[in-house]
Image: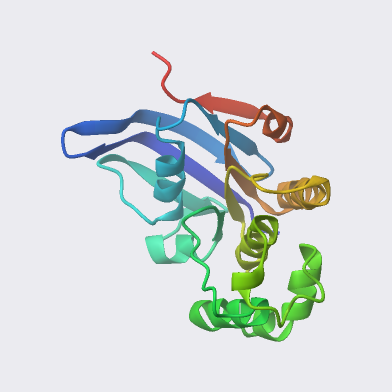
Length: 208
């Protein structure tokens, strides 16, 4: 299997005069799980958005490589799955319709046809035809995992990964992180002490 690498080279992010991130440096290889920690408002979610290609850094560079060859931004985004508040869900759509809509947008016909297996994987089996507006917060989080995993991404970005999940939901996250170790890279932004067990090392934002 081809191997993915991620290089974060001197990345900073500012909004006007307010600097959120300053000179972030990290290198990750396939199998790595990086924790991004720090106080609320320090820029953890911002860094995930930069890694996902949803925003651009003010300076520095984020580069993904497959077997040593750098990916263009569009190709890199196809390798990324994101779980977090940035993943918008539509209350009027069912779980199945979410899977099929995202599959159509991302050009994943296999995922479109295997929605039942994808929902089973995150513990939403039997909920395919239920409108998302009737879902609990934990079920919504599980659906975000389903949407992130449907492309079998080489890079998985998790923002507060166990938020709103019960013990069964946390077991799903345990399995997802372990499987992702075999597939590629995982980056987790969290303040929850329980999530620290997932990481190989931590990038503490806000340190001098």
